[in-house]
Image 1 (cartoon, rainbow, N blue to C red):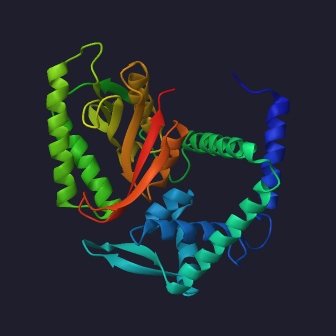
Image 2 (spheres, rainbow, N blue to C red; image 1 turned 180 degrees about the horizontal axis):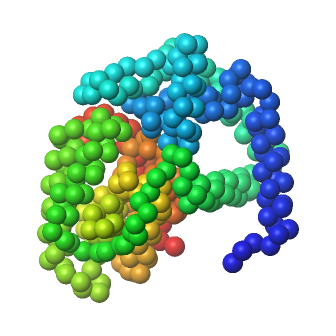
Length: 328
């Protein structure tokens, strides 16, 4: 159902007010003399932890390659950003903040926190959650609309994507490969991570096969396919975290269809499976800090981060995060 015209105009008016209040109309932004795109670039580079390429930065900011190149030249020239060759591929340049860039980002965070604190102080505490949920929902809807428009940084496959469940030949290798390649690029994980994924997935598929298609089975595996090629996966393991807990595992989408809504469809299929079973009181997943798009997707589906702790189970020390979604 489409919203009424009056509602649309009210949302547009509120959006314009936010843009003006946040300083997007001025010549500088966030208490700096930088453009809004440069400020967002510095934040993304900081969160990338020294393993973000110019191409990935452009994808996150939805900017053309030429625009990103010009902006980076200015940031490097100003001493905010430095480039370094990747150890395993000299053609890839990792972006990192210099000491000056780190100080600049710290002041940006302080400015933004003061803006939010000052605005929220004018509201009663019982409205805080309403504001947060509303902003998240609106931002998520805007992002989906942008993905559907196939902007310059998103080129999902034009072929139809179909979802399937259960095991098929080659599934373990393909899911493991997607994980290995993505997390090697995003987090620097290597052999140990790939081995953990492969062994865990093989064990799970054995348990999945043993239960078959029983109507009350506590395991499920879904995969997305384009023209015979597996391009995404997700699983629910109802055993390994104990009674009443559904463990969401092996959630991955191939680069070629990222931004086309495939991840949402997979995640929803898994959560629908959980919600149909009274045996589950909650769903949990483990991830690590820095995967911002995935976190937004989890939070949009009712997950909240309840625990953070340093860990190296995947071969490199990261800030591990546990997300929980209570049964609706």
